[in-house]
Structure formats: structure tokens, C-alpha cells
Length: 384
Image 1 (cartoon, one colour):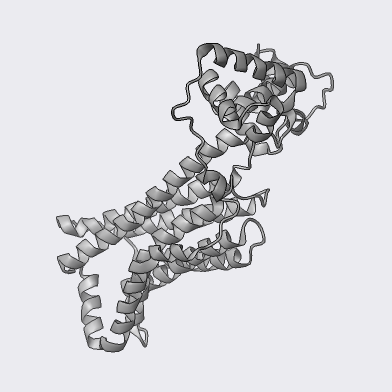
Image 2 (tube, helix red, strand yellow):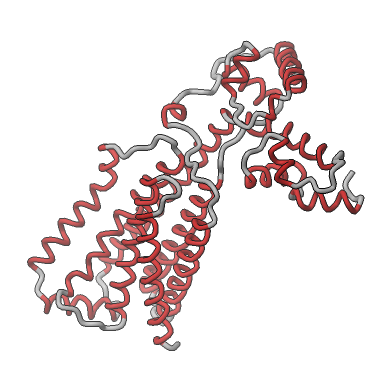
């Protein structure tokens, strides 16, 4: 394999991470704290790429001990991405002192790095670097490296679990919320899982005596990072909304389940009929800001009881319950349109949606077709 290509790709990758991190620091779209947290992560990755380049291709620098700086970042990636996740999913997120507890291992490693910077001589460093280049690394260091990568993957798993919980609860409260940021967040986390999984494989290979393919795994990591950073940049540039967060942390902390609450079948049917009649008579689903609290007040029942009626009576959450009505309205508008120039955007707004991505997602979920496909099939006469 021509190492020259790897040098070029690594140089491009470093520039792109630096560029995107600077872009995030001054980006006005979205939440400022989210942009800055992700910017810090990408800045750290750019420094890591520089370090890899210098060590892999034997570039001489005046203070070679600085090449260990990126190793300290490994204990900061996980906590930063977890806090970044919370800043995206919660509307009112603010950084708290207790969040610093996640960074204690990182602070300890920084202290070790500073001590090494002052007390480790260049000759010792050169010897260590040579051992690393030849993959003659003591097993204790390999175990430490693997443990750190597992630490990162744990925080990524924790982040994805938090997203799932928040989305589930938000769908019990709201009939609509912008999900574009959630999709971008999921993509970023999935890419980091892929990236650090590749790094885990790269670190594990010498354990089993496979050193011949390390250059290939390094190339795969670089190519994956190029795909990742370019995809993130394009997705951020194409974001149409500044709205962030599905709900407040206080709302998320509220208990919504109905433990110990029994709803008799007769009462459930009664409430279901009342709810269905109200939705049809008032067309309340056309209100894009409709939430379960407001609806429960109009029905003169508690929001917890209403949530229970929807969950047990319709086997869905509030979000899907309302969107089912909206999609019925949308398909009806498509079928009964008298204006041949009726646009999909007009149908979207007329059926209670205020986000194109939410409309497309819900439409595909309930009809197994996109709005465009549904409209085209009607013209062909193939949709019943």
C-alpha cells in the first residue's frame, strides 16, 4: 500500500476537522452550548489526527512529549458526547457543577501528562515512540488503551439510551416537535460508535499477533473519519430549523406512568368514545402545538388518565394518536383535491404539521409511502 496516499488523506482530514470545529464555534444555528461542545470534540480529534500523522510518518518536533496530549483526550470524548447529547435533547439544558464529575479521570490523566512533560526526557520519549511504532507496547498499556475505548463506548451507549427515554416521554406529551436535531444527533453518535469500534479493532489486533493489516485498519479509520466529518458538515448546513430539544429536564423528571391505577374496561370505552368524538367534532388535531396537558383540560380529565386511555385504548402514545388523525386528513386532502396545483407543503400545514421532515416521517409510517409517492399513485389510480 502506498503510504503517500495515507499522508494526503490524513492531511485533508486534519484540515477538515479544524475547519468544522471553527465553524461550530461561530455557528448561529441551533443551541450555542451544543455547537461549542461538538466543536471541542472535533478540535480534539484534529489534534489527535496531527499526533497520529507526526508519529506515523516520523515528523520531528521540538517538544515530542506533546504527542501524548491527544491520549489524554480519550477520557474526555465520552463525557463530552454525553453532555452534548443532553444539551440537544433538553430545551433548557445548562452545564452544572456535577457534570464535572464525569471528567475526573480526564483531569487525572491531564495531571499525569503535565508531570510527564516536565520530567520525561526526550531520549526516553524517543525510545517509547520507537516501541509504539514497532507495536512492541507492554501489555499493561494495551489493556489501558482497550479500557479507555470501552469507557468511550459506555458513554455512547448511555447517550443513546438517554435519547430513547426522552423521545419516548416526549411522544407521550406532545403531538409534534422538531426531530431534525435528533436525527443529526443519532447520526453523530452512530458514527462515533463506528469510529471507536474500528479503533478498538485496531488496538486489539497486536494482542492476537496480527500486525500486517494495521496499515489497512488505519486507512479504514481515516476514510471513515473523512466520511463522518463531511456528512456532519453537509447535514448541519442543510438544517432548516434552529429549534432544539424535545422537552425540559423538569418535565422529563416527572412521573407519568400509572402504577397502581386500574382503568375498568367500561370506563376505558367511555373515555375512548368521549375522546374520539371530541377529536372529530373539534378537529383539535389540526393544532400543530397540541399537547396532552391542554387536551386533558378541554376534556376535563387529568393528563395522566388521558395518557392511560390512549396507551391502553389505542395501544400507542399521544404523538402517534394525534398524527394518525393528521395523516387521515392529509390523505383525504390528496384524494379530494380540486386544485391540481395543491402542493405537498399546503397539505402538510392544512393537516396540522409544521415540519416537513415530521410530516414525511409520519406519512411514511402510517401509509408506507412518502407524500410524493402517494400523490403520484393517486394520479395513476393505484391508491385505494
